[in-house]
Image 1: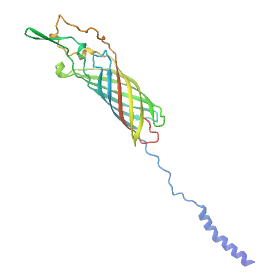
Image 2 (image 1 turned 90 degrees about the horizontal axis):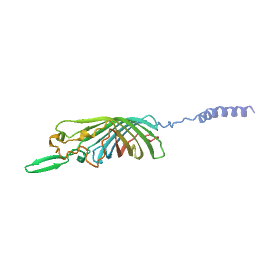
Image 3 (image 1 turned 90 degrees about the vertical axis):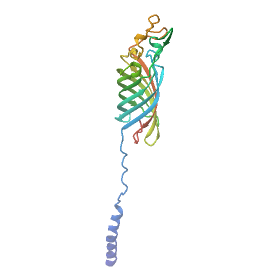
Length: 243
């Protein structure tokens, strides 16, 4: 009997360390590391500007834009915006000029190609809806027109305050990239279309002088420009994936 008890006790002592080892579980699988959040979004874009009929600019011109956004969170962002275009002025808004040639006179309307810059700060507010992220955007800044030095006989610029409101939609098309379609109403204040007048007063014909040609809209100090662009956004590669 004593031998049986001794045998059982030894078996228990030998089995206990093994059982203790079996009860200890070592988790060698480390928790996955969350991807680093990259909150910067850069969107180069191309599109069209639709100019106000009161601006004395041709109605449409190609435009190139660049938006930089720092995302505060999944919905809101702030950043910088810029647009450049080369619209042509409409010579029919300015006085008729007369070029005499012997007993013949030639009459012309004078237009020029200007460079338009719009730049400032902006803020975005988006609503992520699955793959699509519609957003609203507002911006505040300035505009500058640079005249053709050959047309105006030197360096001349015109600038003033600018603000814009708009909306758009963005959606991913690859790892860290997306497509953005954007429409904005850009308001140019302190606007003077006479800055685009490249005519020489010495060539005005007093008998046919028409400072505001008939049928043309009158001048305004505030004009609207519609900006429609499509861009390729380089967006952060995170789970939120929104603008």
